[in-house]
Image (cartoon, rainbow, N blue to C red):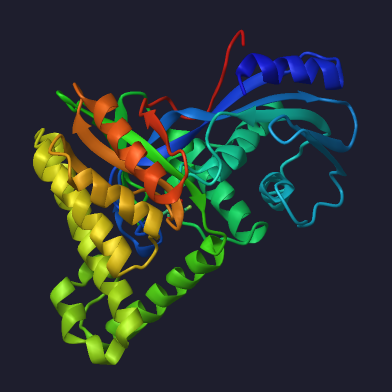
Length: 384
Ligand code: GAF
């Protein structure tokens, strides 16, 4: 779906001229499942995202049209409640606006894009942030981007009901082309790190599977970490967050925690430390050492956090067979979606083909390959 198609569809459906906004999906270099555990993450907004064509309609009704699904949905603004399906990502946003007693009026909206759904690139945050940003502009709500990120996160907690961290919304709204964001998820302090990989580049390989247990498992991981943290806090002195806990301390308290919670906490403490190391490596252009940490992250996500699946593990194992790939791991929530791979620029297409051929042979699925390009955060496409 292209931006032109979105504008054209808007003209067909509503016969007025909208404003056009782009809301990006994200990648994440390292720091997985630790945004809701007070860790650090390293996402970037990508050039794949969702466009929103929006115009006020002088009524009290919100009219949505999903150009990707060819489905329409309308609701009076006075009765916003959760429903089943894609509408929840939009309704949750309107609910957040109303909870803050900000005034919006009826509007027409066509949206759609090119970020693959269920690929771990956060199409849901792109939808939530895109609508919120558009409403903020059109109804002059004067919300800051960081406030919109927390509102979009809240929208996902309350309507779709997935207790996500802040990473995806923050990346979508705050992204900067050619940079990754080093985000402290506890304080929301952040800095941009230029993404200059020299002779290397990043590619995503999409397994094209998305195991449907994902959102229930996500909330369960979050709960297991909360349980583990409370236990460790009661056992260790001066612990304010996971980042005060060392992996050795978790190991010492394995019996107190129980096998499953122990594994989750061990992963979290290791990943928090890894991400801090990775940030230094990226700043010093030490790509090979950075790539090793990506492999370690995958190992942790697969063995300790248990959010991988056979398709993702297969892609990472295949990646290890090619010396030009220096790092590979599952990206995002897991249970399907993409791997992110750091590899030599010169032969990426050839290597990617070998991996996708092997994948096809094993699972009879055509994996998709995307070369990563970063973009600015959610913005209006002037003249679009
Ligand atoms: C999903 C969530 F939305 C993020 O908050 C993050 O936890 C991620 O999974 C895993 O790192 O994308």
